[in-house]
Length: 256
Image (cartoon, rainbow, N blue to C red; front, side):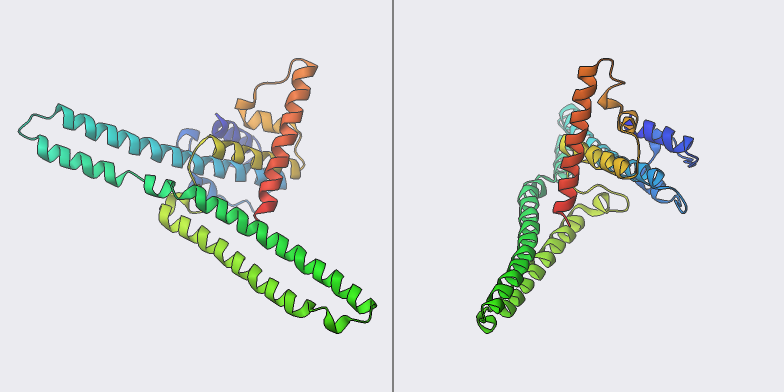
């Protein structure tokens, strides 16, 4: 429903999408030129691109599950004479479509990336504190003993290592998951409810920063519900929207 609503909005804004909503992929959105488009159109198209990428991930999950179920069912229904070959094929399907070995690793990689980014930010604050501390030493006539230059150099080297490792983790994840997680056309990470809520919050943040009215989020994400019919519901939804946008901003800031 969200993809349909996004497509209808961008069409009304003058953006031509030749592919129907049920077959729209991230690559179709990416292929459009947005030169000269205003900030709001760009924000909605960015949200549509993310939605399509997430849907591709969902479809892939469904196809893998169906392939496993079909292979198991065929093995059960095959005559005993041919069952050995069919069961062998079924096991091959189970192995090829199983990514549990990687999914078990994902939470640890996510936590490590978050901690590295946190350490990077705190190292930058540490360097600012060193500069303040050095000025205090200078005022006391002990500038030569502050050690700020050496400490700052060490902190800068460690921060660079943090940034490099974060980049290495992101590269590793993209390579392991393949094209389905590539930024231009795919969605990185599992296609679960958490990913959906993160995507929606990110989109609503983009709409707000582009100057869109608060009602646009509900229009483009029909799951948020229709127009509020009473003051209590309206206030509750507005409060929910603010919290969702604030969480999205914190997530974005934490990755800088």
